[in-house]
Image 1 (spheres, rainbow, N blue to C red):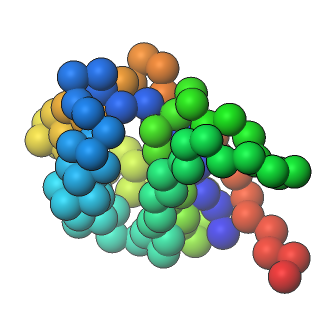
Image 2 (image 1 turned 135 degrees about the horizontal axis):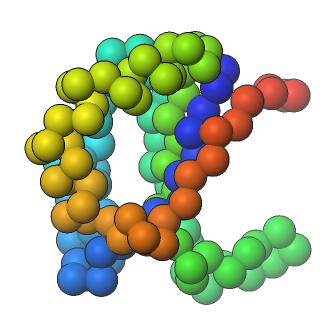
Length: 113
């Protein structure tokens, strides 16, 4: 599976609860409706103050999103489609996230379990 992994910072105008609620209730359903070949879509909210041998300070990001597709061609087609690039989806992204400091990478998932 090919995935886009995004590290998202919230729009500073939103408090953390409003950010989380908006992503779950509005933005995620909108994105799902625009990407017909999406096979995985998860959001993970960092646990603040987590400590331990594998814990990393998550203060820099508010959300980690994974969007999985069957292959690179399908991902490229969906992500450049008029439905996904529509103004309402772009406005939704701009509303809840700080696009200037959020990051995304494309990765190939290898399941070793």
